[in-house]
Amino acid sequence: MLTSHPSRYTKKVVAKSTIHETWLHLAHFYVLGEKLIDMVFQDNILDAMIGYKKAPTISFPSTVAIKIIYDGTTQGT
Image (cartoon, rainbow, N blue to C red; front, side):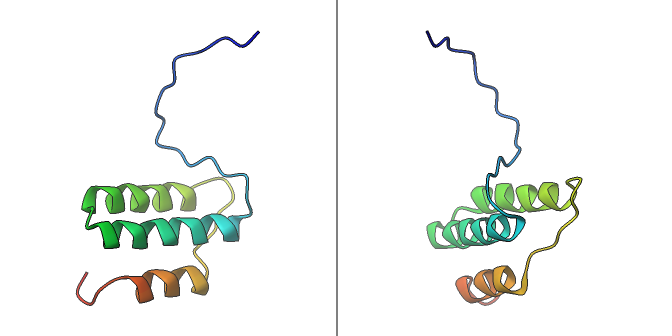
C-alpha cells in the first residue's frame, strides 16, 4: 500500500544523469525560459546552476552547455 506524504519544494535539482547531462539540461531549460520570455523561470534555472556548482562534486558547465545558452538567447540578454 502506498501512502502519500506531503511534498515540500526544496529548490534542489534531483538528477539521475551525469554531471555533463545535467548541465546540458539546465542550459536547454534556460533557453526555454528565453523563448517563453519568462525571466522568473530563467532566474530559477540560474539559481539551480549556482546550487549545482556548489554541490559537493564541484563542476562547471561544459563548453557545449555554454554554447547552447549563447546560441539560444538574443543579443543583449
